[in-house]
Length: 325
Image (cartoon, rainbow, N blue to C red; front, side):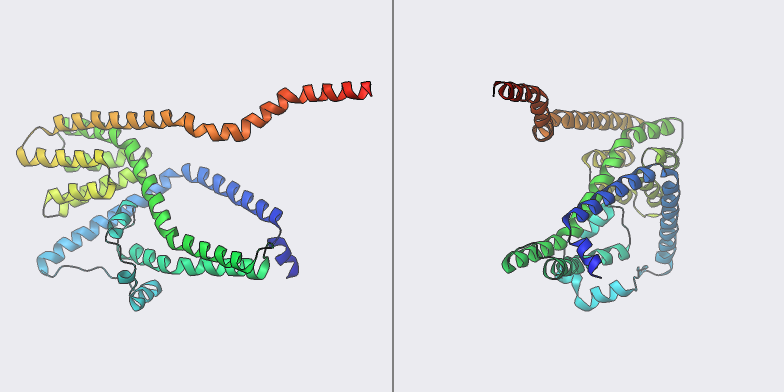
């Protein structure tokens, strides 16, 4: 037991463990990117389940005006209800953020509130165990207490940080393939397909470029089929993505169906605008790259240049002084 404690209190061992975890995460990420087909199949299956759910809800609404309610019975749900966490940690936009991150239904919402409550205590327990039991690193009691409080604060905001990161990555994945999806949708519509069939077809073809966009388009196709108002389906797509390009496309498609304007013309204009938006975003990142590279160049490149340039001169001076002495 003492050997285990000594291992985890050695900074060199902690650095080695951190490097090993980083390497494993890198390899795991690369392997996950090579298995896009399996992920697409699983997500399409979940979207088919969602389509069946919408169908059941539509039939239930016709048979029972009270509608159909979701239920979530589990350990985390009982804790959230007993402690009234949804009211204590109330966030009016959390349900919308969960949809933007790709989490649907009551279970992910319950999980979010549970970890929002439990994470500070988990991080605090880890800090107490490490700083007060395993190794104090020569710190005073007040400094160790401050470190534990910092860890508890990080734990409180950790679920929000994870959710924001998930939303950002998902939105980026969608917008990278969205102009191409609009081009495919334009081709299908001009070929004589209905908008529902065109969206369903594009959702099947765009999965190789963006699984998230394929999932959203499949869900849009299902909502167009079963929701009482088609505008609700387009509005839901805009809310789930929360991107100006998608919002403008949803508005244009709603107006085209409402006023009878040609849908192909609207899609052509929207595809060009989204492609220009994607290009401007790439140009913005490229323009910001020199400023971001300044600090890494100062930290990593300049010391090496100084060693390469001044090293031989210092060696020659030392040799000259040695010979002169």
